[in-house]
Amino acid sequence: MANTSKDAAVKAQVQAGLETLCVWAAGLRFSDIPARTLSQAVLILGDNIAAALSAGDEPELRAYHEQLVGAGTALQATLFRRGAPQVAMIDAAVGNGLAITWNELDDGYTRTAVHPGALSQPLILAAAEAGNLSMAETLRATVGAYEIGTRFARAWPGTLPRLHPHGVYNAVCSAAGLALLRGAGSAELVRALTAAATMVSPGPYSHPIEGAMVRNAWPAAGAWLGMFACDMARLGIAGTPAGPYDVYSLGLGAPAKPGELTEGLGSDWTICDGYHKLYGACHHSHAAMEALESLMAQHPALRGGAPVRSVLVEGSAMAMNFNNNAPETTLGAKFSIPHAVAATLAHGAAAPGNFLDQSLRDETIIALRQRISMAQLPDVKAWPLDRPARVTLELQDGSRLSAECEAALGSPARPLDAERVLRKIRELSARDAPGLACAVANLRQAIEADGCAAITCRAWVAEFFANPG
Image (cartoon, rainbow, N blue to C red):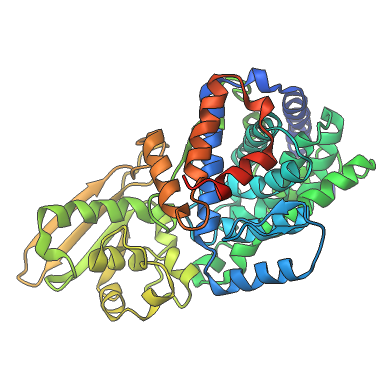
């Protein structure tokens, strides 16, 4: 395909930016990473492990995990579920990758939509445990993969809203983590990333909105593809030097912003710009849920929805995509702002069953969903205030109540403190891994004491399954 001179110039900038990014990432030492950044990485690891554990009783996931355990492969790494069964390294990565976004409680990054933690950490943790590597090595790979994943997403934001980031960046994020964990040099890392970029899954964003459960499998597929890309890179098999441009710009139609690959490297740590979720739904619904909760706190009689004739939810242009009033699967419910608002009105934002199978047959939620409409806010601020909501209730007596939430709690504009994240981890993992929150807290303390090199990933994982907390 012939390129214009402008295309060729941008492609050359992508190649140069990718090379710079890989030189930086391959040369990153654990001692180069600020303690605050490492501490946040530990919280994100714990948050995502807890999110995976919380999905353990979902029938499809349980069946797949039982299939992996029953295969009788080498016992190398842990499936994050009750009993901590051991399976082959790649089976643990794929099995945990399938679980990690199932309940929509994993961390994310909002400067552009991507979940680099969920896409990279299943493979990082499984490989580090199987290789008996230290938590210093594990955290270095965790931070580096997050940087690479977020910078790819920022360089090609135009894949949204057509394509979902779990597919578009799955192989890249996981390959980045494994390559760094293996100590790849910059040339090998370039090979791994250019190979992985050709293996991404162009999953439509419409799939989760329509409830297609395959969306939950994209992080799992990325774990296998990332490992394969790294294995190929070790053999010298790679894409072209500017291959990501060919994939994302020419193939997927997203204009490139090459400067995002390198801007602020080593000073602006993107893992510190992420968010933690309090509710198991798409993050674009959280501000509306919080605004509604503030109204119900002032007017307790609203709980249950009987006094409410209609609800108008106003939000960003992106939020307008999540307007399915009749989701047919639990994933569809998680990506439906009408369902999230109806469930909040019926039972409260934090009710544990709001997005589980029972919610799809909840007559109160079903009735309330039909009273909810959506409209775009005329003026939405730049990140990190780009996901606001205004909720207006029209009551049966004709009166109106309205509340706004500029940014949801847990977002970069209103981050959760460490104790609140630890509480979430404790609540999600209390039954199946009662020592997880304690293990996360202990590892954060080890960062301050410069003790991460003495703790193996295998021992750390064993601690949160064995320790009563």
